[in-house]
Image (cartoon, rainbow, N blue to C red; front, side, top):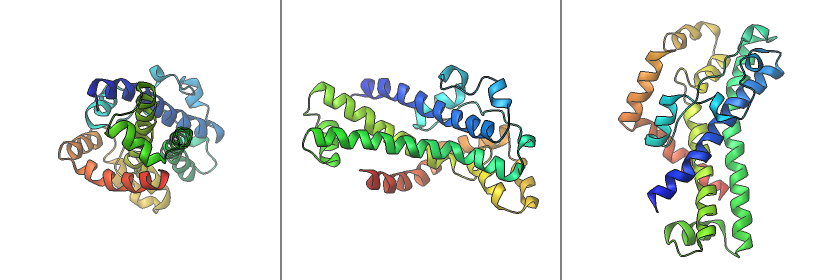
Length: 217
């Protein structure tokens, strides 16, 4: 696989996936009565509104990244704990939906070429025996599936400030919330970066993503 082509395709797929993730956080919060995301200009798919330098750097290096968190005010929700849980769940759910969407397109191109999806991936990406167009479109869609599965699973990890911690707070009794709040901010980010450095997150994400990838393909 040509590394230059890989990264050229990774950038637009990554920007779309992260932007859609953050947009859905804001959209669900807005639906629950919170005007904050709209007032802060975050109800948009424009990547410039969501980019966070450290998250983009992580995307390039580790193939999993993040964007600026969408500001929300749970005080507007009828049930703040449950509302924040739904808002947090919307991000990973959006990435699962994108993975399914890209998988559907990949199946379409496979059928158009009288191949199964696995045959198409092998024929184009692994052996690189196809036309340039088919190679590029297959690689783009395959990246879209893998990246969005990784983003969804990564964000579901119960580590502050990831979505999984807020989802867990909505499930657990309120008294447990203080433990998560202590890890919000720089401390939580440093823990996540350390887990990336020692490839612990990768070892967690890879088998789960592989399981869902087999289902989608």
